[in-house]
Length: 214
Image 1 (cartoon, helix red, strand yellow):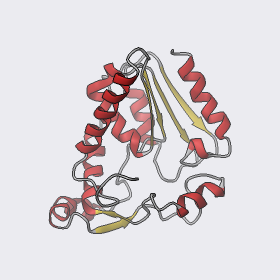
Image 2 (tube, one colour):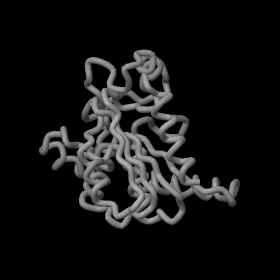
Image 3 (spheres, helix red, strand yellow):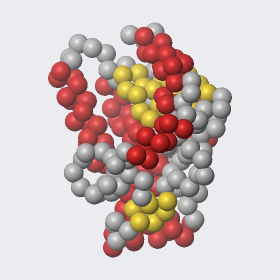
Image 4 (spheres, rainbow, N blue to C red):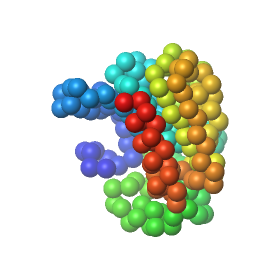
C-alpha cells in the first residue's frame, strides 16, 4: 500500500511480475540454502499463476488461496469491448465498484471488515479503466493454460466466497500435471481464509502442508 503512484492503478500487468522477480532475487540472496515456497492470495493468485508458468523451477511448492482467476465475469460485454480504448485515453477513469456486497465479503469476523474500512492503505474506490483492463487481459490469457505446472500445489477457497468464483480454480486444479496437488474447500468460509473465524485451522492446514514438503 506504500508504493509510489496513484492508488488503484497499474501501468501494465507485467509490472506485478517484475516486482515478484525482484522479490525472489532478494530472498534467494538473503537465504540461499532454504527451500522457497510461495503463498498467494486473491489477486496475488492471478499474478502468481502467471509467474509460475515461466519460473516454477524457483519454488519447492505453491499455495493459492482464493485465487482471482476469473476477472470480469460480472462485467458487461460492452465495457469489456471498450476497455482497450478507455484504458488508453482515460487510464485513471473510475469505472466499476470493486465490491458491492451488503455484508462483509471478506470474513464472518466483522472486525476484519472494520479494520479494512479504517485502513487508508486499502483502496476502496472504483476500479480504474487501465487497472481493470490489465486484469481482464491477464485473466483471459490464463484460460486453458496451466497444464505444464508440475510442482507441489495447494489450492484452497471458501465455499461462501462472494468475491472470487471458485470455478476457474477447480479447472486449473484439473489441468495441472503435478502429481502432488491438493484442493481444499473450507465450508462456510468467505474470501479471506486467513482472517476467517476458523483462521487457526486454515493457517495450521497450510503450515502442515508446507512442513510435509520441507
